[in-house]
Length: 87
Image (cartoon, rainbow, N blue to C red; front, side, top):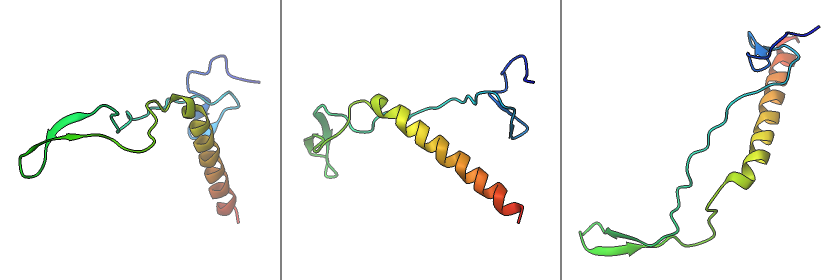
């Protein structure tokens, strides 16, 4: 037995209804700009700012494994919370 639709994303009242679980994910933009930027220092003197080191211009290739790992950790966390309340 299952519901006709899955408009609730697989969760109803905090409990899985047996359907696939869907949710939305958002990522903040990458903070490092790889282009040289013109700015001023604390004394008001013109200077340039250039990021150094290894920086990813896009987090998209890493997004899927990150979301999968966080989902697994969150589900396991709630499972363990449920198990400890039944002791």
